Length: 368
Image (cartoon, rainbow, N blue to C red; front, side):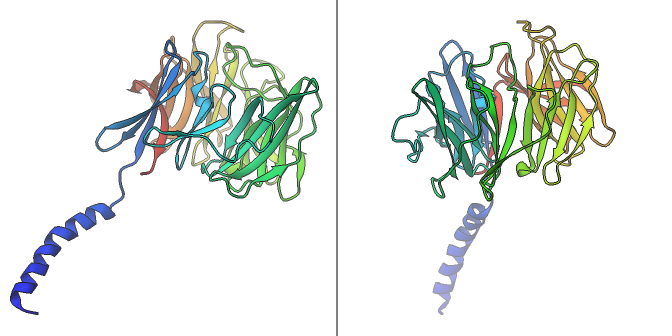
């Protein structure tokens, strides 16, 4: 190799290697925010580059002013999943703001009247129910599939003990083996003053056995529940036999055992938005409504110490309706969505101080 050729190659490497190193580095994640414009009846979805601060924005039109965005929007590896405002069907918004339906839904040849669906913790498995109203009764068909439409399998319909009720999906495991649902959920939509979904008759469908099993013994339900750890743990709120507040029951579903953390006395009337900390030492849930069916906006946060089997209440600022988004900062903080004002807060669990961190609702983080 002559000297001129060697110098040219070295010059090329000087320019190529730095750019190759930069492109090989992991790209910064995308932060997803929601803004619900109740006057215009739409939701703006912001896909914000965490390094540059630049956002791609998508719009979900015809979204009602009474919509509950943390129940209707969730993350998947491909973007944001949301419920169609018209019939509840799942829709996907990609990170550039484009919206797509799922070509494998519906499976019924007759167009369903409405849908219900849940996505797994890893965002890769979808379970959905298609509801038809025929001959004066509601009929449902339930399916589980990979999010890309692969491995579609219908499941047998659950027993329905009440004619005026139908199935309500709660959660599905990452591999689709476990599907959690309420088999007797009221058909009528819940009141605007009911801040949280409550369930009555809990069952888990085991795909390998094609069988529905009771999740837990009957407790004081209707009650809020939350399935975590890929379907191995269930959090359940229930009214205590004596006193106010909510007992927190934590089920280990693999061995069908539970731990009860007794209620903290409170004048709040509703509870929900359950979360378990990643290190499994804390749980938390929201409490709202100082009086039954009151229009007054008020809320607080209950933090349950699992090791100490105790609850404590962190009072919230007035005129805030907080739902919990996630534990944060090694479980020292909670990220909260103020649904009344469309803002995001952080509360430090030691100092019990609140801090606004965004003027929109933070949904979560997506990798690029």
